[in-house]
Image (cartoon, rainbow, N blue to C red; front, side, top):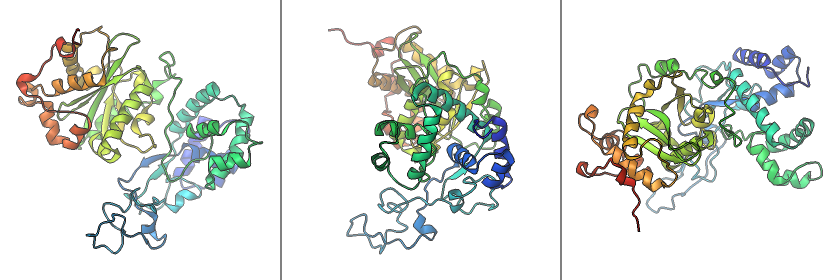
Length: 437
């Protein structure tokens, strides 16, 4: 029993007991498992359910007095200390900055499930972690498939490697140091070891950062998930309607793709419901990785805080390219940046604004035309002409003009959105026609 992997039923028991405030030892006794197995399961599969917009430094929670001064190097600054400075305190600009972690996350049960401290005193200042059985099972099955497809070590060798490396990493040692000290015991190179940690094959995590999201480099269209229902758990259109109910100020985006020719380049499109502003990104491959990378690129351009503010909710269809909600919802560091929901099957009308907006793309690029000869500069040109076209549904105002009011100049500048006079807008094929020499 102890040598077998945890089942979904066991994970459900773990979640239930955690919600009741039970400690790891009690849960291990209930399942007849070693304490270490339950610890690894919880630490490996906990996730950030709440992220503070600005995590407070541990110095502000009794870790000692902050002694940092004069970070701005400005002779005009009158502050005796940098503590509390809006520009430098609680940010990576300070060399002494270390985000505060609730002490309860550093010991059993390592998550916020069943925490008796309600309301939480760190809410708004620190990340909160939860464990969910269904989510853990999906991650486990995904990792099992990926690990068997890409790791040359046996299960026993991986377990031995994990038992050797993870405790040392958790003590703060670097991979280079561990490899130098245990080179004869580690059956792979240092670079491979970095990859194993990066892809979450090992137990070790950096508790100062949310769990890093894993991607699926071997994804292919033929490998559709056995049950898409796993991914839409608590993300259905009905869940979407409940989530946005009585929240009129939410920034909601519709997400889709537009195909040129089968096997060629495609577009990822996003439309802001309130303004009608549409983002178009060129995808060289039509798969999950390309979509995730495109959304992360937008996040990188805007910055995580602005992205979280402007992209609060995303509604997509159930295409396989959107089948990794955890990667879409989190940035490259694992920090949650948005909330993703899915339309019902065969109900494209549920994101009808974006579907109708695709007609403007087809006026320039007819169906069946290849996108392979287009550059991102061409896409910016197409996007700007579409967004500057006035709409009767918007009281003869263009999406660009509304986006300027609702999303701001910083957003428009980051996405290369510019003003085009109404009489100069072109929605004909010759807009992107290359000159002949």
